[in-house]
Length: 205
Image 1 (cartoon, rainbow, N blue to C red):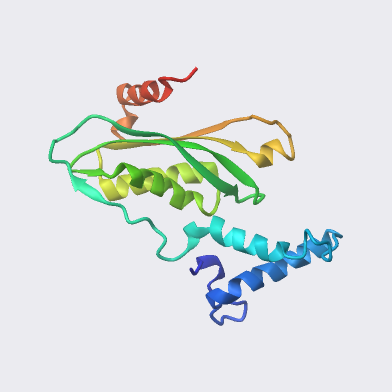
Image 2 (image 1 turned 120 degrees about the vertical axis):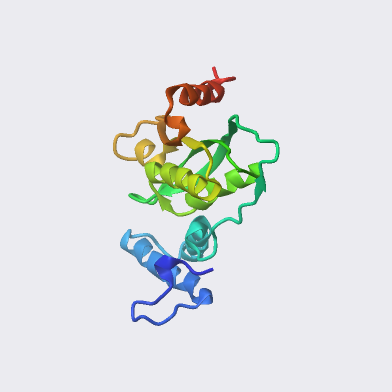
């Protein structure tokens, strides 16, 4: 797995995949030392390597070739109503502080000539979440991908998330929920947008 961000060493030489964990671990070990923690503590001895492996897993979306293989099917039934995948769970890391934010994505589209496998909508969310992110950018990237690959009549994405950079530090407001949306095509029409929001809110409260 090769990340765009760590494909090369500072001197320009290729960084082998097997070297990425110890390279990241070495930097994190330095952070632990600067924090004044005891690296001889049994609970910290292997922490740099664990953190390195965790980052490679959490940032899988940066790997070359990691874009999901999305299966499209011909819209033989000429289905022209809304398709919604609600409550897709995701976890990501805030690119400002590298602490988690997490929540649910709701993705809707109205097809033209093609439809997409429902599980693939969750894979698209996962792909863009697996990198340092901003919620606003994540929302737009999902909508942009769906619009470009599927060419539907329209797409709408709503993401609801909790940010630990808000809850653990700074203003420290546990439970605060951030909501973002991205709209393409026919969802700019008020009637269609309201239909989506009505379906999204059914069963809540």
